[in-house]
Length: 129
Image 1: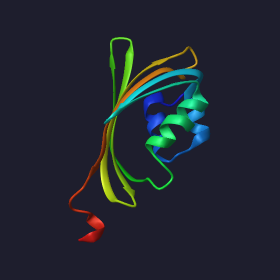
Image 2 (image 1 turned 90 degrees about the horizontal axis):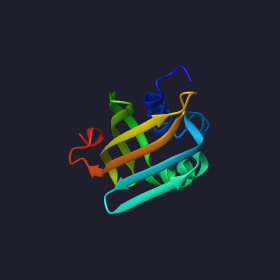
Image 3 (image 1 turned 30 degrees about the horizontal axis):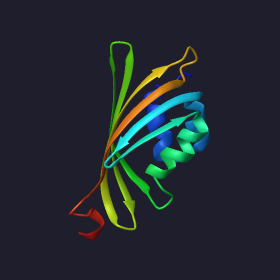
C-alpha cells in the first residue's frame, strides 16, 4: 500500500467506500472500539466494516466535511485523529475519533483500537444562518 494507511482509512470511512476500507484493513484485522455507552469488538475486515463502522456511521449519516486529519506514531504504533462534520436527520454534528493501529508487512491495518467522542450536536448550523 503506497498511501498513508491512517489517512486512507479516514478517506474510505468518511465516503463509506467499502472496497477502500476492505483494502486498507487486513482480512483478519482485530478491532476494538469505544463509543459513549458501548464497547465494540470485531474480528476480520468484513465484520469490522459492516458490523461496527457502518453502525457508527449509518446510511443517514453524511460526512459533510473532514475538518482535520492528523497522523503520528507512538513508538511502533501508528495513530490517526480525525474531526468531522456529520449531518443526519437530527441536524449537524461534530464527531471526533482517535485510532491506534498496527500494520502488516503489506501496509494493511492488522490491529485497530478506536475511541469516539460521539455525535456532538452543533448549536449553530451554518445552513440555518
